[in-house]
Length: 102
Ligand SMILES: [Zn+2]
Image 1 (cartoon, rainbow, N blue to C red):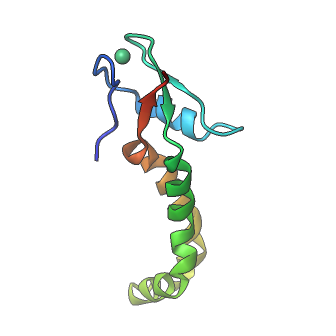
Image 2: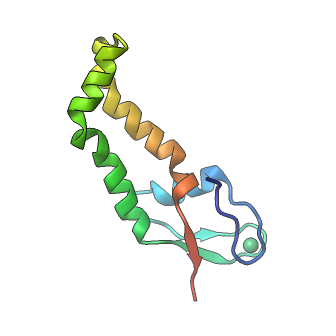
Image 3: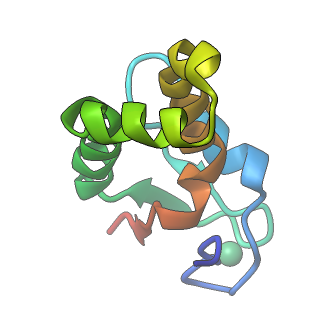
């Protein structure tokens, strides 16, 4: 998994630029390449991927709880979901893909 490069000039997008584009209020924002100024849009499938990933700990609640118990981390179980969401935000630039607006 790598952060996608500009489809036009292969300039690497900054991790922070993508974070801001994905997690801004009012949905996805277009990303502009700093080098060639090409506007990229985030693929709509990204929204579905994010929702699915956000729901995974809820779907496997019992497994997550068992896992925490196995490591003796019962006291931290309430941090599991916030931690997962933070991880999801931090790692999102690695699985989000863009396309060039025609
Ligand atoms: Zn570019």
